[in-house]
Length: 143
Image 1 (cartoon, rainbow, N blue to C red):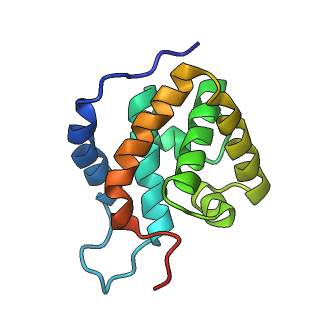
Image 2 (cartoon, rainbow, N blue to C red; image 1 turned 60 degrees about the vertical axis):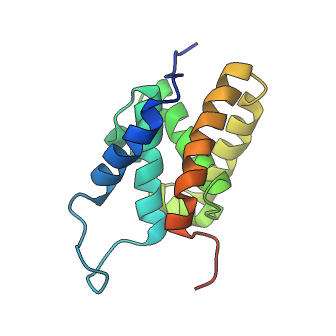
């Protein structure tokens, strides 16, 4: 079984790093053409999951499946975007360049993996980080 980062303290520092990574190359002002909130949220979640699993964020967002550990980390990112940030299956699918049914499958698979205490602990830690930043994305809300 793959070893994941388990220490809690680095998450706070990683928020700034992941946020910077997500925002690099994006327009500076609100009136500019900017990606949707779901795309920005997906990049943030991919950066966070990538950090926790040791897999490059760009690999998680790539169009190909990649090795098994990359695919599993991508499934975790899709699951977290859906469950923690309230993005719909369709929104998650568009953000990751996948089909809605692929997202549904990923969510079921990751939910089943939560029976393993190690996977559940990792997901709980990632969910705690995302709970802090969720208001920034305001997904699943009108307006």
